[in-house]
Length: 454
Image (cartoon, rainbow, N blue to C red; front, side, top):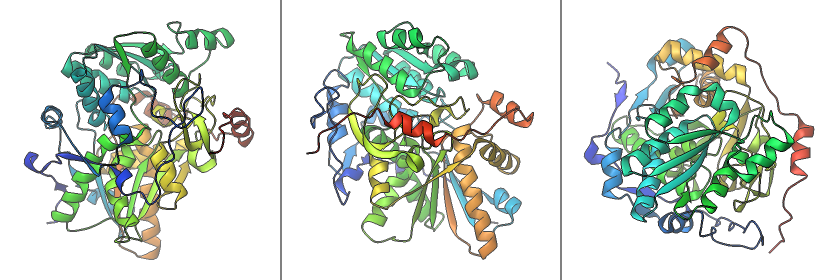
């Protein structure tokens, strides 16, 4: 009988996070100050000192505090599954594995960094945090993290998702957070947007601006980010470290292809950064790493590699990344966690250097893949995760054509139990595809900051 589940014991969980910055063949370009545009560290009001330190650290290993490990152990280590039923349904010789992050209390990978960030802010004496959220997974996770450490939290949720996914808001409120739709009348940024367009559906860039403004105008408050920046990807490497250990020690295999979805990039980078090190040092040169994004928000596949603000109002630092322009407003697709105009600088850097790939897929095809996965493996996946499932199935079907028994590893970021309205729309034939027009991309890119070349 072939094994289906591969699980580490709690005592074998990682006690350190892996920092890819120690092994990059070329260092990341430094962030730029949003006003002066000069190379800088993050503006001090934004994050607590330890988070700032981790953001710029080049140490290969960073210890996970015992207080964080103790909360991790309430759901970690997560299970690595062999997708025997999906393989059979596809009639493919490929071996498909997936690391399932949907068993956390918040239902996704997001608590891996939410708990860490709440801990460091509590240790620094911070009483209150602000943040943004797209689909609500990050807002839910940080609400849980703040609950564990007794910190007040205000969440600015992209308006279209606020109404599409009311149970995410209720989940946040159950854990004690306050959640408002963004753009909101609570900040000057939100007021300005609503004055121009009262019906604006919002964007992650807008929500980030509101959360940053809120934090900057309250002495007892810091800002917390759920993706994109280096410290967030660092905390998510527990996923890849667990996967690499259990895959090699218990499944006696190593992936040929790793697939995951990207919006800001933390989930998938957390999986593949411990693996991409092997590609960088030449021990696994043929490993393919495929970042999957929506055709409605094609940041890496259609965006420009350029300096841009992390938010709409230009309050956040400027990063060199693939971008659709900071004033990009995405269409109201259901994969709210994949609607960010930019991308994690680490992912962009690795893509630019040729170590990882990117692919964009349409909304209907992703839900078709999600249904296939649900009807074989039994898990109803988040709309974001369905993007990765789509490409996993596509690669497995290529193996069927070629007869190759490749090992495919899927980064499964979370369940879709709060996304039933999206599945209902798909099953009833109401869901539509959105291809973001090339002219809209060009229009948004016309407003990039003019950063002086150093």
